[in-house]
Structure formats: C-alpha cells, structure tokens
Image (tube, rainbow, N blue to C red; front, side):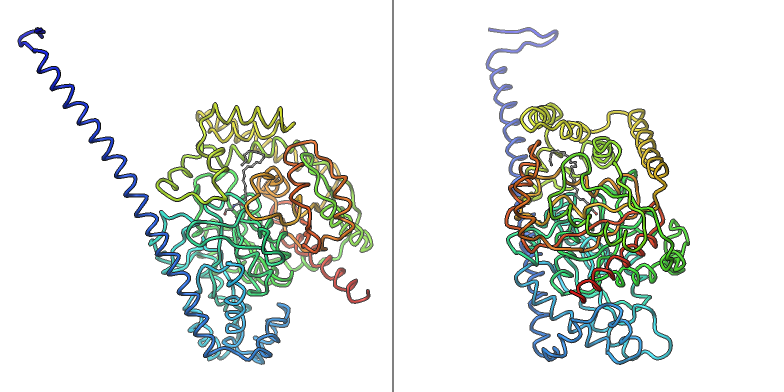
Length: 590
Ligand SMILES: CCCCCCCCCCCCCCCCCCCCCC(=O)NCCO
C-alpha cells in the first residue's frame, strides 16, 4: 500500500521504519531519564553517606582529643553544675578559665551525643577562641568565654548548613551569620552544631544525613523539633546556651519536651539573616531566631548581648532597640490572660496543671489572672498553612528532588507537600468524617497553594484582620500578657508527631500573630496526671492519638509559655524569671 503526501510517496515499509525509530527514540529517552534518575539518587546517597561518616569522625576525633586534654571529672562537674549567672561571674572575674569551661562542655556534649545523637559536629575553631579569651586583658565582654551551641541551619563560616537536605551538602558558608558574629564579638565561643529534622518543617528530630536525635529524659521518645539537637543537648547538660529557629514552634516544642528555657522573639527584634530556611521568601509568617538555655538568666544574658550596636549595624533591618532593663526589672502588678485549651484539642492533664500552678504563683505575687479565649484557632491554623505552604509546597519539593526522604518525614511530605489537590481534599474528607475534625481539610487545601496574586493579597488581609482581632481581644480584657501550655502534651515516642500534628496550634498561634513567646519548665508529669489522662476527651482523631501516645510519660518535663505583645521580650522574660524564682524558692522550702 502507498500513501501520497502532497509531493512525495510513502510506502508501508517506510511507515514501519518511522514507527520503529520513534519507539526506539522514545524508549532511549525514557531509559536515559530513568538511568539519570537512578544515577542522581545514587550520587545523593553516596554524598549523604560520606557526610555522615565525616560527622561521626569529627565527633570521634574530638572525643579522642579530650581524652588527652580533658579536665578531671571533679573539675568538669563543678563547672557543669554552675547556673549561668555564676558561670558568667566567674569567667568575668577570672576565677574560671575560658578553656576549662570549653573543655568541660565539649566533653559533656561528646559524652551525651553518643546515646542521644544531638551533635552533628564540633566547631574546631572554639579552642583557639578560648585561648585568645584567656590571654585577653582589659574589660571583658558580657559573654566572655561562654560556650554556645548552634542549630545546624545557623551559617558558620566554612561549615555546611544543610537543614538535613542532601542538596546542601558541600556548600560551606562563606561567612558567619549576624547572630554568630555578634555572639563572638560579645565573647561567646560557638563550640557545637546540633541536629534538626529534614526541612525543619516538622517537630520530629531526624534526617538522612545525621540520623535521629532522642529525648534526654527518655531515649525512646522524641526531643521535639525542629531545634531538636539544641533542646536535647541543653536538656542533657551538654550546653548552657544555644540558638535555634522557630516558624511554628521549633524553639518552644523542643524546649518543652526536653525541659529547658527558650525565647522566640518577635520576628525583627533580633537578626534572622544567615539562617537556612527552605522557603525564605514566605515572609508573612517568617522564621524567628532565638536562644535556648538552662535558665532564664541565660536567655536574658543572650538578649542583652545581642541587642547592641554591633548587631544593629550588621543588619540594618533590625530596629535599634537595646534591651530595656526598666521593663525587665519592673514590679508593677499585671493583668495576665490564661488558657488550658486552645479550642482545638485540649492539653493533657500535666500541661493543664502546669498552667494552673503558674497561675497560682502569679496570683500570689499580686497579678490578676483572667481566663482568655483564643479567637478562631481554625483560622490561625489555616492562615499558617496558607502563609508557609502558599506556593503549593514547590520550594520544598524542589529542595528534596532526588533526596532520600527521612522515614519520620515521609507521610507529612507525601500528604502536605506532594499530593495533588484532589487527594488532599479526599484526605481532608477522611479527617472530617472519620476523624470528626474539619481543620485538616482547611490546612491541606491551603497547602495546595494560593492560586493568584489577588487571592494572595486576600490572605494578607485575612492575616492582618486576625492579628487585629487578637490584639482587640487582649485590649478588651486589658491584658498585658498571656500564659498558656508549653505544648498540648509531653514528649511522645519517636517518629509519631505526624499522628498528632494538630497540636502545633499551641505554638504556631504566636508565630501567626508574631508575638514574643518564652517557654519555661515548671513541672514534671506525675502518676496522678497519668491517671487523669484516662478522662482526656477524645473527640477527634488527633486527640485519640495524643491520649494513646502520652501514656507512660511520668517524670517527663512540662513547660508553660509566656507571651506578650510584639517587641515586649523584656516583659516575657520578667514573668519567666519571676515564676522560675518562685518555683526554686518553693523547691528549697519543701
Ligand atoms: C501533616 C498532617 C497532615 C494533615 C493536616 C492536619 C492539619 C492540622 C493542623 C496542623 C497544621 C500545620 C501542619 C503543618 C505542620 C507544621 C509543623 C511545624 C513544626 C515547627 C516548624 C518550625 O518552627 N520550623 C522552624 C524552621 O526554622
């Protein structure tokens, strides 16, 4: 048979050859594509393996070095037991050497990371800095000789900031970030870099490069995240002061689960320049940087040392507001709002008791406590998802292309980041009908992305309106501050955060409204709390999971959050210090 195409003729033999050539080209392209994918994934795995080995080797080398140059156990323990104020005083008056303090904390950090895997690598330059401190004469800076640990996403010259993602391995940072530079200028010694979950947008603690960090109070449980390594290292006594980041609770969740203090400042109060975030462009609910510490004095010292002309000069977007002692040291009685239940899922009995006990302390100290109802928590959650996943999660999926997805992140990644909109709607339907919970659908649809600029502007208006509503509620009650649960529950078994993720409402509320929020350990889960857990209401799927996963948590730490209007960090710290002091006095008298 012959076909005639205008000026030339084609027989079926030619047609057959054309089809064969097309099919061959197509299968070549396809296999090329598949092979390229396999190759890229292979390269990524090799890179991850090499980086992990380098990290382990560096930690081991530090351990070996300390065996030869370490302190005696007694001397080390005396240093490790010192609260921040005493440590600072002794470094200032020269009765402690910076090198001894560094060695004490290096050796404790290396010791605890063996079981807990909280350190990703030591910062080797610390030693030289400590020696320089000890040779210094003249007036000492406020952080003189104090070792500080840093979450891995803080840029440190010469080190990678991977955020647990292979794509960023072998990209050493050209410079220290603004906070690190200011800390060094103030005499601090960055000495350890700490672990985080892949992408930092979960409150788990694992990534394929550095592995999984465990809770210092129960290694079968998670330390919270995403400043997981910081919470764990400070909670285990391996650091006295550290720094992390927080977009939805990443400072406060690990602080609560590991029993340490932290402060998430108002975004803008201190510099956020030079931290690795996957979606830096999502500026409506941006990441905050902030300190974690063993005690409130550590947070105060950190803020005083950062709020100085050096930082204001390095990052001119930061308003030059120094630390205001007149607010921190004020004794005026305040009106403080409180809640136990955010209006989505109740907090477990131990967290509720934590707030109740802090309320009693504050009332005894002369403050007025008023019950506060959080306006429309569903709206706050929806706004959070719209603002951080507004691009339909494209920045996240791009960052993880060819990467190994961590098991602890797989379900979140699939459902929030990768699933097409129709599947998100089906999952939302499941949560609403089987889980008796309409909120996940809103969040999942939001994570499918904002479809146009005018819709994006609508989100901006909604966010402004929500912030105003919150402010008006506080004004209506004449509130100076708020206290609320540190989180909905204490630490749960590793890898289970996905099953309870709605609890993030307890922390990300303050990111949505951009209020400073501190977290303070106030109690521990008791047998009585565990008994009361039996009556925990389980209306939604998340609440059921919380009840199940909270069992067996006796002895775990419980924090309370302290919150004030934007730029009132000193007020937050004042209240935290007041409660910390009362708790310590109470412990001494009992
Ligand atoms: C993943 C579950 C899918 C179902 C959706 C349920 C929605 C229920 C409400 C939860 C809304 C938020 C979901 C997103 C999870 C984000 C968790 C954020 C943890 C902290 C992140 C952070 O602060 N990172 C700091 C980075 O520097």
